[in-house]
Image (cartoon, rainbow, N blue to C red):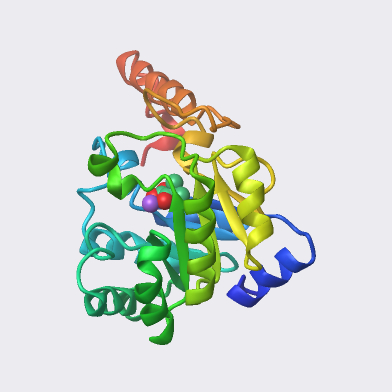
Length: 261
Ligand code: KIV
Ligand code: NA
């Protein structure tokens, strides 16, 4: 099947089709998600929480994101591979953001970057796009801003959110991710821009949806946000396999004759 491109995503939006997006951090997971027909694989800085076991996304470095992006992009045959600009690559000088975005295309075979922020990031988005790197903007709840915001919470300022999404579109973003807003605001943003919107905790009206893969497959410990639905229980599957393995060693039933030289 042909690769999912920015152009293809725009056509899906114009044709009223929905876009699916999930996070991926490693080769085998990316391979399965690609085969399952997920349109966009996000190498998210959620890496910090999901894979590194940290409290926030702030610890993730550019070199770490590139390490994971390279594997994911090599595994994905059809999906677009989108890579987060980790903190503070999208906060320092614009030239640094352009350089870091260029590294994504140069050092991996990924296709685009995602950057937190809207109106205040318009010049930065335009500079990265001008350099030849497609940008998805990320508005609403911005996890890299957690210490300024004082926590993760639902974003309800309609005027600001609309202005952010429109500024991102005007700056050349190929899509706008919207995180943690009421459904009516998810709809209002989607109606206000002509590029695709991808929601997470943004209700059913956005062009597409994204979730953290570990959350939706049940490979996760602890707190699950309200917006997550779980379609699998991978943690239980691994626990069960590992327990059986341990028992088979204890009772000397593994390895058997067939499994020995
Ligand atoms: O890093 C990430 O996984 C994300 C999604 C939650 C949108 O940015
Ligand atoms: Na992210």
